Length: 280
Image 1 (cartoon, rainbow, N blue to C red):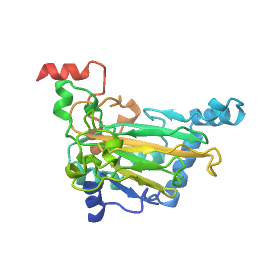
Image 2: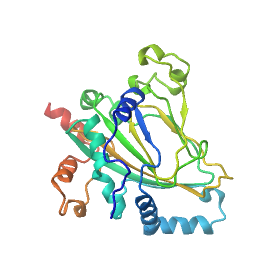
Image 3: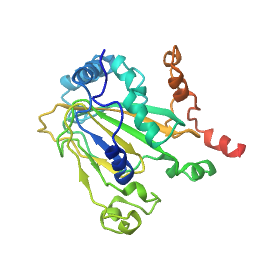
Image 4: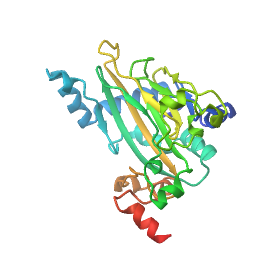
């Protein structure tokens, strides 16, 4: 089985883009075998097959436009499993976070024609809570690695970003509208503008989750029946994030030392942040 990606490590230009813009877009980074293998694996998942069958058979417009979404995505085949510690993924994480990071969780999504947009947001969950633990963790890295096996056209369930917005502390008064109106340009050290991406099949985006981003709706007349999207999230070592998942036993069997390090962390529970605060 060949490599997943056409590169095994990021370039200086990639790392400069991450720190400057808050993300790295890597078009057509999957090898052809890995891209088609991952797509085939996803289509073979029983839950996905049931969803696609329902989509084909339904006469209910609301059901027809309902995306498939599962979190955590544990039903991974060989290609999906290899994403967790592929050489490029490991090199990116170590070059940006450093050696102390954990696997947080993952998700799988299929967006059909008619899928609704996802508003501007950021995903660093410690910023949504004011517990002492969250306040202490806010400046740590929370990295999302977004995979697009069949790609997307601009305006067709496409990703949009506000490059540089990761430099702005996302307090309750910070909104995408205010960012784009220029109110925080001085703080960001640049003019903050919307960037609408278009990526070919087999692409990925490496994203600092403090950067504001959004997703366009999927037009009813899209030439692409479904946009496939899977995501792996990693966090700097520390207390759990809102969705830090339990690790399946099967993932631990025969895990390499690197994987053991990735998986050796506490999963999220409703009480976990309070218990951490009491320990301090």
